[in-house]
Length: 379
Figure 1 (tube, rainbow, N blue to C red):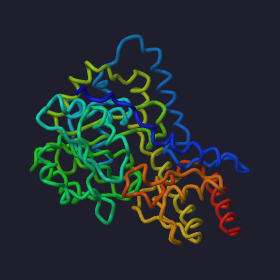
Figure 2: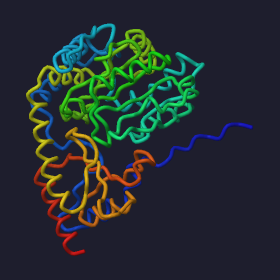
Figure 3: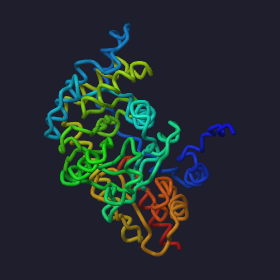
């Protein structure tokens, strides 16, 4: 019997359409805290670097990334994370990290056709699982511990034997968890013991209280995946990179040449400028910390509890008054004109939570908090 044709499921955030319409209908319009898309400006010097490079874009850029971009990324890893990588043998460029996350399983199964499984956190970014689906692979969700970290001790040995890759996401989405070097060392050790690549999605790393990275455990058998979308508000430019095990990096660079994934010359120039500057990132972190503290102060008296971690980008909320369904909880927010994401979009284990992304200007979040307070006062 022929295999059934693949029919793409609804995109997770498209499921929020009805609640978005409700939130938009509230006086003052919708405050969209559902998708983690930055609202703050791209630094001016980054835009200028991109414009200047546009006139040099007649030829094809290198798929692996320009020497300047790769060197700037390696310098950033050394400066901000305290780890040394070789920019030419241990680092490659990607078109933002979502395409890399979605496409990695497809390439890994060509490298090792004897394995067929992608492991990922049971509450996590949906693309980890979808990457396996698009590659025709098996996916297995791994339970989390009490602090929202993926728990390698709960991986079934039979799944470990079949695994091509284990995705971890620290700092975490949606939980805002924040791991330390000891956690990364444990995960890396598990991966080496079982011959499983550890792919660590670290796109929020500069918004965590401690900047720990999987690379701190050594490069063998690991990849750190980094994005400029959050740190530099460059989500629209699609600019990221991966670094780690030189054998894996070389395989991916060579395979991706054939696939045609190439970051544009202006994008790479913008990335170089952004990676060389830390001041704008520290300012952005200050904005997110201010928004986090303001929203926590407003939501806690209303019975909304953030029981996730300390990373300053998301709030992972549950209702302390007995509402245990994330869609019902999200609907309460929508009636106050605030769009949040029900937790089961990130996995069934998150069904009693919602995620609130702190990506609206502070004054809009203050407005949202006031409307929530008014709504609760009327109930």
